[in-house]
Structure formats: structure tokens, C-alpha cells
Amino acid sequence: MNIALIILNWNGKKLLEKFLPSVVANSKEAKLYVVDNASTDDSILFLNKNHPNIKVLKNTTNKGYSTGYNTALKHIKADVFCLLNSDVEVTKNWLQPILNFYKNTPNASIVQPKILDYKNKTLFEYAGAAGGFLDKYGYAFCRGRVFDTLEKDTNQYQTNSITWASGACFFIKNTDFKLLEGFDEDFFAHYEEIDLCWRAKNKNLSVHFIAESTVYHVGGATLNNSNPFKTYLNFRNSLYTLAKNLPSKKLIPIIFIRMVLDGIAGVRFLCKGQRKHLWSILKAHGHFYLNLPKMIRKRDTQQNNDYYHQQSIVWSYFIKQQKQFKS
Image 1 (cartoon, rainbow, N blue to C red):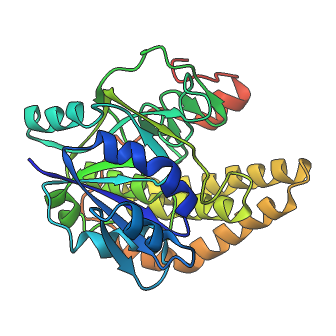
Image 2: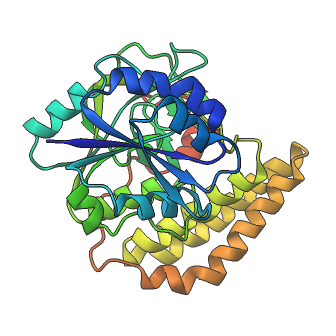
């Protein structure tokens, strides 16, 4: 089984300088690629000078995570793709447990390693932690991270099935990526991996967390949590994901409840003086309703009723004060 490790880059020379050495040193089992989304810094010059053995694929425009990877992966031959953020430090022998899992689990499709915080390596990291789940209303959370609460890693989460794997370090079989027709390019960035995993689950493909493999992720290197554009993408793309994948009988009532819950989130932003984030939510809903017919047309004929881990993570976290996944 051969693996291609692909890093998407956009004006990330400083990140490549800092994190690429760990990838090169600890990923001997993989063929390395950098996909450049029309960077205007010296990323390409740096790669050609310092890492001439890494294959560089150049996209002509920056169309985000989804289109960037979709375009590049058409030109890469491998049994398994590893999509790795440029702000990730990998560890010694991190690939071997994942390769072993694929070899010993013939039906394995999508996997992610343990993702810890680069800035505090005892804690799980926001984007992925020990594998992702959804509540009934499409809000995403992780083992080890619920909203802004991060758990300390004590090896409490073992290799297991999950609902979605993090795009920060995302493994998928080439054949399954093609079967699913890649990421939805209307997403641009954020939530596209959750949508892809949900579509995979609808086709009875498996998604797993591999506890024996560890990486460290900075997170927010391209868009941090304080950026209103990130708020817009997360709210809009979450709604896109629901419209595309919810069972038909649940679609209208859940979208209505999400409208109410997102409104409460907007009021919360307003009370904190974050008016730009309130506007991002309003804009996300406006664009969602404009594009709802398009999302409905993308629906698969098969939906999975067992898509959520619990009823409402919002209620559990904010009202019942259950701050950790094990609660």
C-alpha cells in the first residue's frame, strides 16, 4: 500500500519553514507533495531551494481547501491520500499505525490520528482532537474538545469509529475519494471534511480515529477563530451539510430549529460586542437560503438516520454545564 502526503499551501512560507522538516524527517513511507494555491510570497522558491525532492503542484487561483485539493488529487496516484495542514508537526513513526490499520482493516476508508495542541502538547487541539461527532442539529464537537473546552490527553480515547475526521490531518483511500467525487467546492473551506465523512457514512464507508498516531496542530494559522469570515463559513457550511445529508423527514424541522439556535448565538455575539460575527451569521443564513435549492439537488438518494451522537450539544454544554465529552 502506497501513500501520498499532500500539503495545501497559500502564502505559507513561514509555516513550511517551521513544520515541513518534521514531515520530511518522519514520513519516509510517503511520497510528499505540496499543492500551492497561487501564493504571492516566496513559498515556491523556498521549496525548490530547500526541498527539491518534494513535488510541487501549482493551482492558478486560490479557491480554498476544497477546490485546491480536488484539483491536485486528480494528478496524484496513490492507494491512500493524507491531506495535511501546513501548520502540523508530525511525530516519529506516526504513519505506521495508520498504514497498519488500513492493512488489517480492509473496509477502512477515512481515518485521522490523535491531534494535540502544538502550543500546549498536553492538551487536545480544537480542530479534530480524538475524532469528531455531531449532535442532532448539526453542531460539531470532538472527543477531547467541546466548543472551547479542551481536555488534557491522558490516553482516555482509544482507536474507534467516529462520525467525522479532521481536515487538519485527513486520510482517505483514493478509490473512496473518487467514489464520493471529492470535497464539495461550494464550501470553499471549513466543514467540507464533515460533509465528506457524512456522505461516506451514507454509503456505508467507515471513519476511524487512530489513537496510536499523534500529530501537533497550531490551528487557525490561515483563519483564526476571531475572524468573522471563519464564523460565516462555519455557520453557512454547517447548514449546507444539513441540507445535503439529513434524512428527508428531519430536514425542515431541524433547519427551523437551527435558525432559532443560530439566532441565539448571534445575540450572544452582540452581547459580547462582536457585531461583525453577528453579521457573519446573518449573511451565512442569507446565502444558505439563496443556495438551498442547489444543496437539495446534491442530496444522495441514501441518508443515514443514525448520524448524531447526542440530542443537543448546545443544551448539554451551556445549560447543563457538561463541558467534557465523557460527560
